[in-house]
Length: 259
Length: 287
Image (tube, rainbow over all chains, first blue to last red; front, side):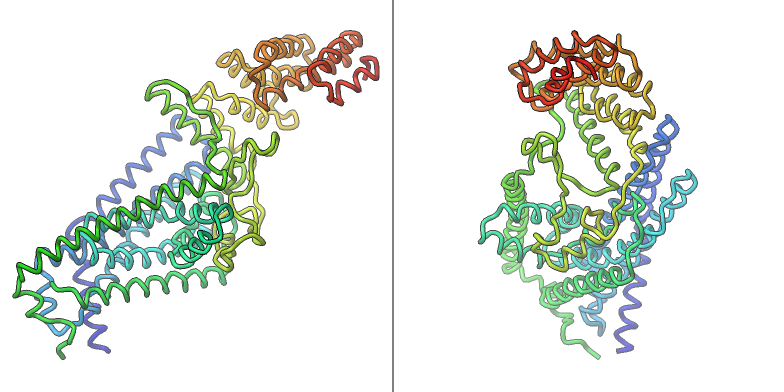
């Protein structure tokens, strides 16, 4: 067990170094700085009353950039290693494919967390300086986003083993950024549907991961009171369960893959 | 330890040209199928929403106009939604226009007793701003004022923006001159709006105590309404009715009972069931 943990740790560290070397994170940080510059211009032209709009826009920028960062990082891990054939020496060693996948997954989750930390920390400081700071619910928002990146990383890494990198990014973006829309559509369309369709919609709703449950940005933008510890724990369990399901699916696929 | 699920021979050496081409083709077919399934899901969702009667837009779109005009309308729609969001502290509401004259919205979240999702629904009501959640939370309406300012600049022909903005400014007579100036700007941009003229007349009479100016606007509202009588929507008909009421009440308040009776009689010909005009008539034009 200790050997396997050591393998996972080494693979995680190598994936982290590789991602930093590719400068993926710098692009996201530069885009965030640009978006916040635009918001600053908003304030300078004399619209200081738009507090909630600025809070909301800032969180939207953080959400989109961090989520896209997570998707791109996850989508590139295994396909690039396979196409550049750098995975072969790794697989030649006595390392299980499941451990390779877990190591890469942890690296993506960690990097996404770092990106989220940088973006959210910057947003928090930025709005606090402008006197429009977030309430205590902001830290719950960061925690839940971090948990959602666990699910997204696992989902996208599994997708990357099923489709091409381009399709993985497209599908990942549609499934994660459009999650709220899909869930809302099912809930709203359910009462007007026939019995048969209601049955199908119910099962789709139960089976699909609801990433919108892990997004507190609307409550944070409008400064709602924090959630109770029980709700946070339930959501953490929900996120970890889905991450586990996707990782298990990915591992099964990776083991069977002819590389 | 050599893991059984890592095979070097399988990993590097054998390119298997014949099987690989087939696998690649099969993989492309699968990817196309995934994307097609996702794209097919979108119209299905649209149909579901349509079936639930939730497809209506909250603001009118321009019938014609270039890209710039459409962008202005879209920006206006975005800001109109932002105003609603801000007013309700992020709780989502849906337009149900057409169902009731005065009740244009209902909560987007499903009430717990009608929710098929069980504990997942309860969780969502905790996580997202919800009309059925544990906290009821409202924002100061003043926070919406900058949105109105932006909205009427983005789309100066969006009449509900002026009406709603003036109502927010004038809440219980707080910022009357600003509300009137806002409506006057709306009247300049929309000279044929019955609703703006009626509201201006109402504010001049009730809050600014300018009987003369109120007469001007309310009479203009009546003229516009009479001209468009066949094509008035529900809101415009309300404004038409209110113009009669405020005009009659203004005459009564400022000591012109005969004029009040005359307006009430005219109004009753258009709105025979109106109780306010009936009372003006019963009291002989006095308050």
